[in-house]
Image (cartoon, rainbow, N blue to C red; front, side):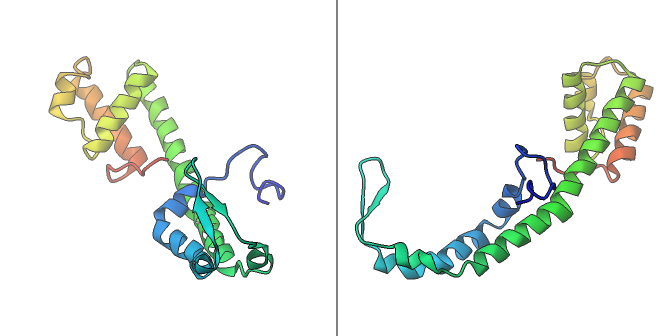
Length: 165
């Protein structure tokens, strides 16, 4: 529906699963709100492929079911994705790209090393640890380390980069 209305391009997966996973208990409760009432009415047996075979006619159970709780839950997850997750992820990616470009103005290093540098800074509140300075980044001078840490602080504020998905 979102692709049909031009919200996201066809073929692009809308990342609502993160919102669902964050509310997995609510998701289960929503699904069980309908299925738990039906389960006693359904006759089934396990199959050799670890599935189930339904033995009685169940089509009438689903023909006029009320999916309002399911639609409400999905709406809340889509709303969070649109209003929180996508803007947060977009902001993170912009900040990371700016950080990468800034690093290239300070020192020349491969993308993989920039990524490692970012992870070290992220894990240590924006400060490159003594160990990292002595081992992985021993070629950086003290002024370069200061500039790198300032660059990180400029793009990720309090030293903590938001989580990316």
